[in-house]
Image 1 (cartoon, rainbow, N blue to C red):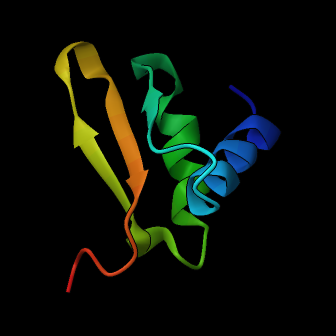
Image 2: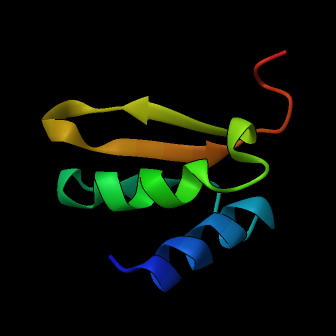
Length: 64
């Protein structure tokens, strides 16, 4: 995964083009680094899975 691909996935989650996205263990660091630079990073929810995978969803207000 590269920077542009991660941004595309984040935008697709924001725009509801994707309901969720599974990030592989080897892509986690890159994806999370880019995610945390987003103004709305708090609206993304990561759910840890087996073997180091994480499923991300976009859920505005889920932390309130």
